[in-house]
Length: 369
Image 1 (cartoon, rainbow, N blue to C red):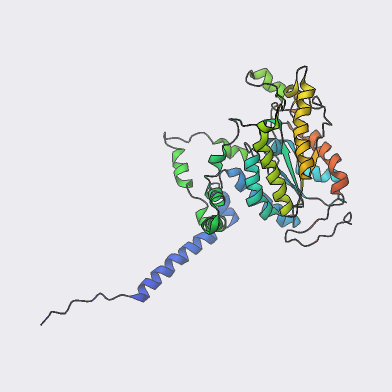
Image 2 (image 1 turned 90 degrees about the vertical axis):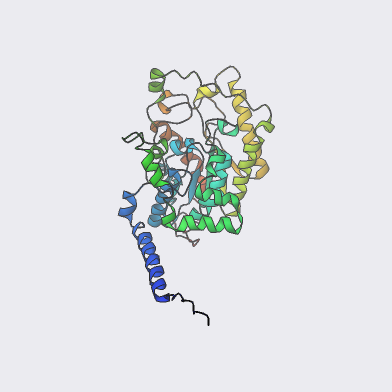
C-alpha cells in the first residue's frame, strides 16, 4: 500500500492579501509623488532625454491651467529658447489680440529632433493654433555642437516613439502616465555625484532648465564682455548655400515639421533667427546671407507656409555686441528687440487669430472674427 504524499495547502486569502497590499503600497507611492511639494523635493524626472523637456511640460501645464490654452508655440534650438520672450510678445500684441504664447526651444536641437518632439509631444499636448519654428544657418548643416539625435532617441519615452507599434505606444504611455517610472536612473545618478566623497559639479542640463514661466532663458554676459575675457578663434563667418543638396536633410525635416503642424490643425511659420553680423562679414557677406535666406524662402513657397525674416535681408541688421551673448545667442536686450520686431510682424495676422481652448472649444476674444 502506497504511503500518501503530503499535499501543499495553498492559501489564496494570504496571497490575495499580500498582492493587494503591494498594489496598495504602489498606489500610495504613486499618489504621494504626484503631490506638488513632494515633487519639488525629488530629483528632476528622467522620463525624457533631458530635464529641460520635463520642466517645459510642467510650465506648459501651469500656463494651460491658467489660460485654458496656448495659441502660439515657439519651437527650435537654444536660439529660440534665449532670443524670444513669449510674455513680452503677448503684451506687445495687446489685450485685444488675446494671444497666449510659449517657448519650448531647447539647447542642441537641430531640425530632425525638433520634428520628433513637435510630432510626438508638443502638438498632442499643447494643440496650438500657430507653430513658429526658429532656424539659423548653422542648424541646416551637421555640427558637433548639435545634441546627437541617436542620444536623444535613447530616452525612455523617445525610444518608444521611435520604436512605434503597439509595444512602443504602451511603453510611452506607461512612462508618461506612471510617475513611479519617471525617476528611472535617478538614484544611480545621485550616487555618482558623490563618487569622490563630495558632491560633484552640477550637470549643464540642470542649469538649462531654469526658465521664466513661458520658457524664455536669458543669456548673459554680453558679447563685448565675452570677447574681452576670451578669444573666440574657433568662430568663423558662415559660408553661403552653394548647393541646396548639402542641406537637403535639414530642409526635409523642416518640411516634415510644417506638414505635421498642418495635420494637427495649426498654422506653420518658419522664422529666421538672425545671428550677429560677424557671421555674414566679408565682401560677399550680403550674397552669402541672401543664398541662405533664399533656400528657406524657396522651401516655404514650395510647401505653402510663411517664412518671416525681420532683418529684411540685411545681414548687418543685428550688429551690436550689447545685443548678443555670443554670435548667435542674444542677450536680454537683444531678445527684447527681436521679440518686438516679431510682434510688429505678426500683429496683423495674430490679432485675428481664432483662439480655442485646450479642449478644442472656441474661446471668446474681442478681436476674434
